[in-house]
Each structure stands twice: as structure tokens, then as C-alpha cells.
Length: 307
Image (cartoon, rainbow, N blue to C red; front, side, top):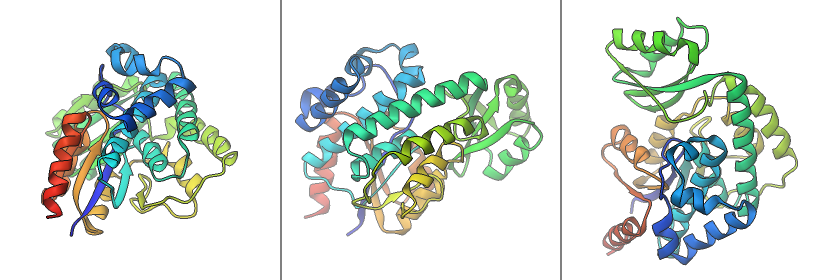
């Protein structure tokens, strides 16, 4: 029987109203938001009613998405669906590690809030943006980046989508270069150039914060953005390095599929990862769960697979 993978959504997938249906329909999901609200008052309102501008602020985006990711995963788990392997995209990797028991909820949530504050500060210090480059290979994007002083391929998302972190002042010329090469560059709704040298100060701050924590071994395989391999003994080092190194998403999905994952369930806001997975490994089943309708659909497929 094919294995099931949970993949936890990352920054950029946020939208107003996310998580409300889960909160109202699943006690397990409700518990996530209630715990977050006790630690950071206002989190529920931001998820359920926040404006696009409010949710685009990294200080709000990261804790809110962390909650929606875990609410979706715990709602599925309460409904009888247990993954065999998991991974998270950028921010989603912390939710994945929390689900796997590396952090308890309060530790994971506080770490996400600290990470968000550090990343916002780094973005203000180094004005930068992220562009999704479509229709070009990773190698082509690397070549274009090589002609700019501060442009870095940072998310290897699929065979024809690579995200670039770039200094804001270079963004117009970079977009022209992409277009000249036959591609298309789309500005992402994030506040800085994440997973690049723009985030070097964040790496230092996260390493210090992680040193003070007693982390547990993951209870199931968690594939790391850094190297597309399951987390091993160097959890703290791997997680700190994630913030200023590229996300190897395509390789991670391919590795999970090679390990036997035949069903990928995106947990959290939106369908971004579901679309990428279908392009990376079109032979697998990929679906998203962000509300109770998604939970019911996943349960129906789960039951059919086990008949």
C-alpha cells in the first residue's frame, strides 16, 4: 500500500478567513487556535478576519499560517488519517516538526513568532523581494541571477518554477532579463528576500534561540528543505541553516515519492504545494485540506484505499 505524506503550506498562501471553518468544525483544530490565542492574543481574529495587508506582514503571516497548518493536520489525524512521511515548505517546516513532536505546540509557536520578528527586521535592513520565475529551468534562472549582484535562486519549486530573492532596486531589470529569456517573473506577496544571504542575521538569531531549547527526535520522517533528506541528529543546525539557504522542494517531493509516498495531502491554507506536486510527480495523488470539506474528501479517499 502506498504511503501518505502530509506537506505543510508556507508563506504566501495566506488569505482572510483561513482556518475559520476548521475552528468551527473540528475540536482538534479549535484547540490549536485556542492555544495560540492564549499565547498571542489576536491570532484568531487575524486568521479569520485579517485584511490582506495585515496578513502580508511577516509578524502576522507566520504565526497565523503555523496555526492553520497544524489545525488542518490535527483535524485529519482526529479523523483517522495518519501520515507516514511529512515535509513543510519554509515556515511550514516548523509546523511539520511540531506535528512530529520535535517542538511542543507552545515551543513551536513561540519559535515561529521569534523567527517572524527576526525576518521582518532583516527585510527592513536589506530591502528585497521574491519573484517566482516561470517557464525556465533552474539552471536558466541561475544563469540570469549570475548577471546581477544580489539575486539568488532560493526556492527550487518544480521543473519550471524557481523563486528568486533579489534586491528591490534590481527587480525591474531582472524581470526584463527573465522575459527576454522566454520566462515570466511574478512578484510574491512576502516582505523580503527569504532563504538567501539577506537573512544571514536571522540565521544567527535562530541558532541562538535553538541552543536554549531541548528538542526531541521526530516521531516520523520529516524531509528537510535544506537537503531533501529526513531530519537526523543535527536538528538545530539544519533548521537554522534553512532560513538563509535555498528550499529544495522539488528534490524533497521526489525523495518522498521514491520512499513510497503515493498520496500527498497539503495541510494549511491554499493549494500552492498541491499544484507543484502535480508538476513534479504527476503519477501521485495530490490534494489539499484547508477546511472541513477537504477533511471529509480526504477521509473518503482514505477509506477507499483501505478496502
